[in-house]
Length: 380
Image: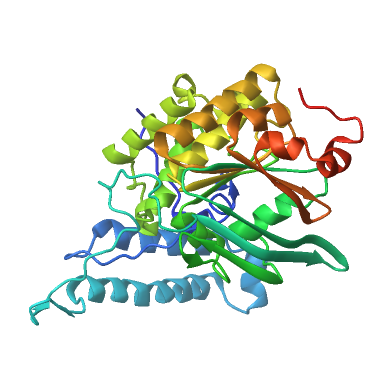
């Protein structure tokens, strides 16, 4: 297998909570210096400084009134403080008190999640996701008005309605791309008010998008490795720059499990730009699941797919809910797929909630038939 250097979580704000697939899947991690100065870090800083200087246009140097020699000397002097900090940090780490009152000589890094932890969605006493009077406007247009409903841990809920009903806007309010003007969003007992997208992803919110969001020059396996690395939040920028952040055995194991779950193991080493729309949808779904979310927000995952591909996506969503206990909030226009996947259905129209109940109940509601299906709409 080819060893790759994965981008750090800081460089992927769009994927995970980003966009994304994968959020695409924006992340922070703590780090501590090693007990001795890493030679690769020093070399990396020097090389980075030289590269930056080499790429500066000659015009910029002339405008600043610096000769080429003085310009390079100035740049190298700017690198020296960084080297001094690295040398100091390697031999001087702040002591922290131990439980017994003594001090220890190093501060252990705290990963976002232990590598050995293989748990998936963990039920909480209350609802996993709770929306209360969520409201979002664009100018004078109220896109979402007073939406309130809950999603329990391990539950699958369909969110349906005609185009322009406000479904995707509501998703964006939950994931952090938009900030609602009113109402509250509570996830696993934590208020999401003002929380950045990447932190929401770290809490366990996964998402796919209406428009397929993939890295066209990466393989399927690499897509999932990026998501796995972002979930852990253990990347170090200097390791990425020095090509020292190869995947661990635990990361590879989780990726292989997810590939098998979604049914695309045979495509693991295929470049995404060689795949059709149906398989790209599955890659995006797999990337979201690689982050082991407690809830998956799937925004029209069957858009553009044929009947066979739609059935594959529906089967994956059911399997994820059954085997991993992952809650699913599904926005979908294919009502037959919604009826197969969800436990409960919420209907929106013109930004407001129109009905809530089982799929058969809401589809029999005259107001739903008029707003969503039309006066003569029938569901077989």
